[in-house]
Amino acid sequence: MVGTQWGDEGKGKVTDYLAREADVVVRYQGGPNAGHTVVVDGEEFRLHLVPSGILYPGKLCVVGNGVVVDPEVLVGEIEYLQSRGRDVSGLRVSARAHLVMPYHRILDALQEQALGERRIGTTLRGVGPAYMDKAARVGLRVGDLLEPASFRTRLEHNLADKNRFLQHVYGAEPLRLEDVLESYLAWGEKLRVFVAETSPLINRAIAAGQKVLFEGAQGTLLDLDHGTYPYVTSSHPVAGGACIGAGVGPTRIDRVIGVVKAYTSRVGDGPFPTELHGEEGDLVRERGHEYGTTTGRPRRVGWLDAVMVRYAALLSGLDGIAITRLDVLAGLPRVKVAVAYRYRGGEIEDFPSSLSVLQECEPVYEELPGWPEPPETPGSLADLHPHARRYVEFVQEATGLPVVLISIGRERGQTISLAPVFEPRPPAR
Ligand code: GDP
Ligand code: IMO
Ligand code: MG
Image (cartoon, rainbow, N blue to C red):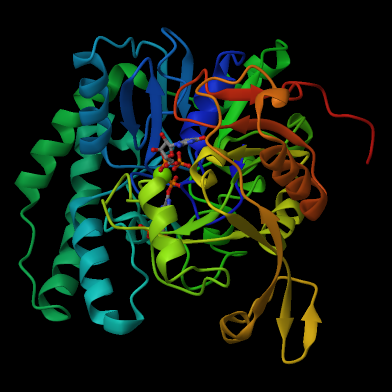
């Protein structure tokens, strides 16, 4: 399950809904930059690292090797769930997952400051710098926390280097080895019982015929390779990311579902063709309470962009989509969907790689009639207003993808399931 836009599509809600049927739920990329919200019986849970299947007691929930783990955030999240009476015994964390270190958070902030106007608008959680160290082969991993002597040596090396950089490039305060060491080893002790070799674990579950749900974080347009670079995150939210970030072969994945918010939102900087600036935008933002789960920042909002969703479909080989937040658009006199981009008098078919081209693209809109508030808990599609149904049908046509699920509220019950998701791969399409 992947996000098809710029994140915050409602992946937490959809994961929680689908997880009822799954035996294992796996996060495969991203880190504490993610904020996945799950609401169960009126209780809200905001998850950053723990998979959104954790609210089913004992459910096997894996933080895969591709995730960057801030142990302070993870320990905090485990304790927060426990303090709310939740069972976290099914949690497993890959020993291969890289750690977010204090210098990553500091560097994230300093790099953003240095960029000034050109800043990316990161979540400041240290995620980009942690992935940089992973690629540079100097990263520290979750498994290292359990081997204090070598952790110390490697941290010492890293700190010497990072402190030089902090002091001489940015004029910032150096970090003290003993402080970092003490807190990280203490968190390591708390995490010890959860650390595992997760790829074999997941592969064994698949071989035994169990249902495994891969929970993407961020969204397709934030993908390091395929998104609106450089206004992207440092990992691969597309479906292929699940293979690397969980350690499973592409032949083991039966279906890929994209989560599509009924409109579009973006929390950081960068181009946004269907962005709404005036009153309509404010209305959608207020109705949708569009403020970041991780940072509280107001999210930018705009109409649904079918060009973007088709691009996401191609990159991840989507089999179907889950439409979320259909209720948020209720009450608007009319709604729009971008079906193509116009660029310098012509139409562009493929989502452009150049940001200056994207900036100049004018969405071609189709306008559809609005609909009133849906019932709190609709049983089926037939319970939705004909105009809401028409919108869903239109999205299906404009994206060329079957809708497998519709979400019209934050609770589990506010979901209409249209097709089974855990099915073996259908014959070639
Ligand atoms: P994620 O990052 O993709 O998991 O999404 P977030 O949790 O950051 O943001 C989605 C927000 O929308 C959360 O507050 C959810 O509780 C909420 N949400 C999810 N689905 C729906 C829906 O169908 N309707 C409404 N009104 N809210 C929803
Ligand atoms: P979920 O999983 C929305 C955005 C940031 C910024 C860019 C880079 O909740 O959908 P980073 O901190 O990753 O280096 O920031 O990516 N971003 C998200 N936007 N939802 C997210 O996660 C995001 N994670 C990162 O706003 O534009
Ligand atoms: Mg989010």
